[in-house]
Length: 108
Image 1 (cartoon, rainbow, N blue to C red):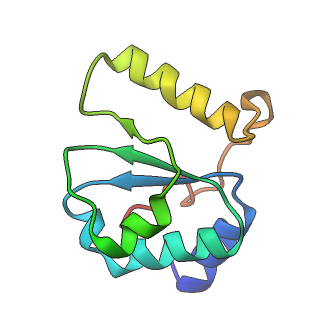
Image 2 (cartoon, rainbow, N blue to C red):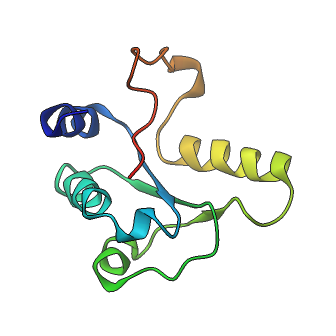
């Protein structure tokens, strides 16, 4: 996906879901995406896929966010926590549209 398409997807999203892993936290593309989400005023939902120590550039962006740790606990409870967080951040689950082909998820 080209940089323009990524920028446009971030502009259109209601919530920027940040999938955190040992690989993603090292990606400049991920850091750039988070910076754009902040610039566009998008709420960020950090979702930890595994235990990681967040580097300084990302720590600043994540102050005040409420992360979800998918690697801990019960899968069903984690899924419910994600749905509740998305609802709290303004996503109406009844209004979700089917994503266009090739735009389901951006992962760094």
